Structure formats: structure tokens, C-alpha cells
Image (tube, rainbow, N blue to C red; front, side, top):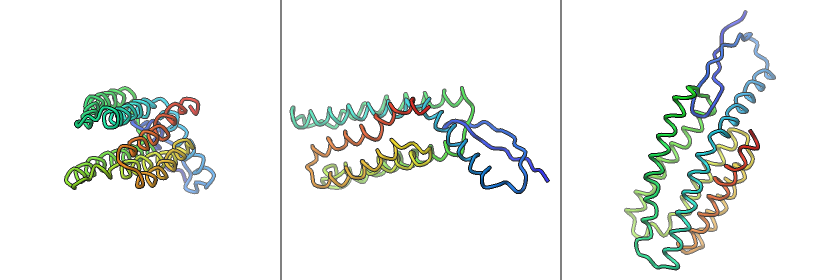
Length: 211
């Protein structure tokens, strides 16, 4: 007896529906092949959307190094103002995402999982920043937590699409988070820059070759 199954495989942002005739006794080999196909298509479309990794990677990398320079070399009290750059960056990302989704009109389970992961991490960043701002001297200890979240996002993303540079970047971030605990705040910034380099920028540049 045959039944209809609709499988969604495509980009991290959108969904194509493919009707598939599937026997009730769907073999493990067929199931594995289908999952691998979903992962491969998500990986390919993620390569097309590497802008997210590279754009936010370089924005954050430059902001961190700028803040380090303002603190250590210029001794500017309002060094945190460099992070205002994330406001127009966020607006650009939302506009780009909406236009991309309208253009492609497809989604996938793996892609939706990654989107949910990063939305959750983004919300967690916001809540953590609020908690730190209300804690005396909290900003002196923020970077181990920030890097920890970077590592979580990239590691899980790498596991979902079986992309080793993201997995390795996540592991490196976890190590850097531990190192941060033993450093003063200004040098924690350098660990943050290294975390972004290994988890966003380098994997982002490697994604096209995987596609």
C-alpha cells in the first residue's frame, strides 16, 4: 500500500514541497538517504546565504577591535558606543531576510531548526545584556558568556548541516570562553575577536567551497 508524503527540502529560510510516493515499509537506508539529501540542500543554500556569517562576523570583529583600541590606546570612556553599528546592521539583515524569503519561497526542517536556534540565541543575548547591565561591574565579566553563546550556535549549526569548520569553531569558542575567565576585560575583547574569527568569518569564507 502506498501513501503520499510531502517532504520539505531546501534553504534555511524557505520551503519547497515535494510529493513523494512512499511505501509503508520505508527502509532505514531510504530514510538516511532522504535525511542526507535534506542536509545537503540546506548546506548548499546556507552557502548562498553566507552573507549572514560574513556580514555579522566582520561587523562584530571590527566593533570588538575598535572597542579594544578605544579602551587601551585612547582611553575613551564611552568606548561602548561602537556597538551602535549593530542597529543599522540589524535593519539591513531584516530587510535582506524578508526579501530573500519572498524571492525563494521555500523552507526546510533543518533550515527552520537553525533559524529557531539563532533566534533563541539572539533573544538570550538580549536578556543576558539586560541582566549584565543591572549587575554592578557586570560588563567586566560578559565576554565568557557571549563567547559561550557564539560557540553553542556555531557548534549546533555545524552538527545540523555536517559542516566541520563550524563544529571546530564552536569548540574553539568554548575553550576561549574558559580562557576569558582569567583575563581582564580589555583582553577578553581580544578573545572575543578571535572567537568571531573562528566561528563566523573563517567558516563563512569556507562555505562556498562546500557548495
